[in-house]
Length: 96
Image (cartoon, rainbow, N blue to C red; front, top):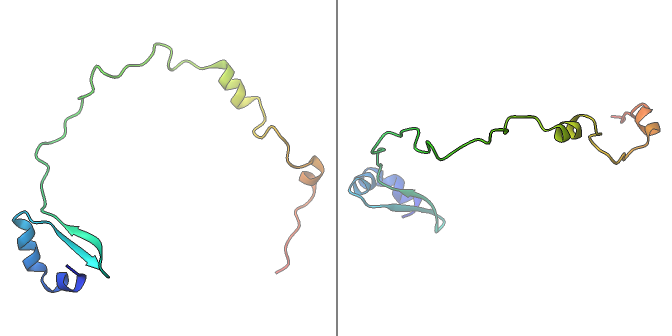
C-alpha cells in the first residue's frame, strides 16, 4: 500500500491491524514502514536470572604494576612527529 492510500484509509488499516494483519507501506514502490499489531509485554522483567553464573577472579580488582607504569610513565606518542623547535614556535595565524 502506498503512503497516500495509507493516509486516506488509516482508520480502516488500524482495524485490520487490530485483527492481526500486518500491512507494509511503500513510498515510490519501496517498503518504508510496517503496521503491526501492538502487543503489551506479557510478564514483567525480573532481575537475577544470571545469579550464580557470573563470577569475579579473586585478584580482578588488584592493580597491575606493569600496566600502571605503561600508562603513567611512558610517552603518549612514543614516536615524536614534530621537532621540539617547531613545537616551541608561535603558531601562525591565517589572514581573514
